[in-house]
Length: 148
Image (cartoon, rainbow, N blue to C red; front, side, top):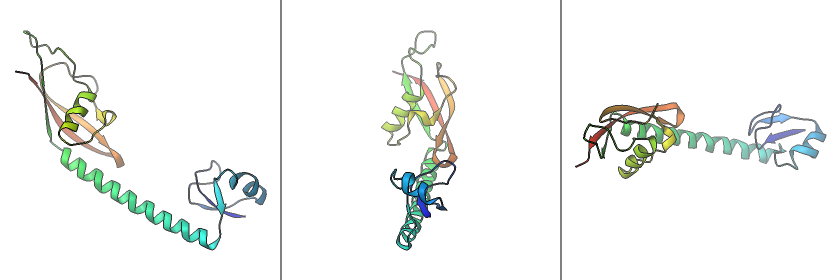
């Protein structure tokens, strides 16, 4: 029986693949579990439309990620923190604090997208990588200064 896979199925195929499977396997497992549906002419047309929609969405997502990457490249993020008499910071600058500051600047970057090897614990300027969807990366400059 020819079926259209609605989800990735191990050892059979990926989502929206049209596969030939044993009748019993299709009727007793794949179709009742919602993993597949029979490949009729209408169903095949539906699959083609779904693939086209997914392609358009992927292109839109890539374009948005590229726009965010260009917006972030060489962006300066200034964080003013309290500093002790000998120049030590009273707090560490973590990915969460950088993410919060970017959100204040109307740029929505999640904490896990910011690549910090270790929290920043001194005043200065630091290059920080930001990972985006579609394997895109941008580098921002985090500037730690003394609060007045």
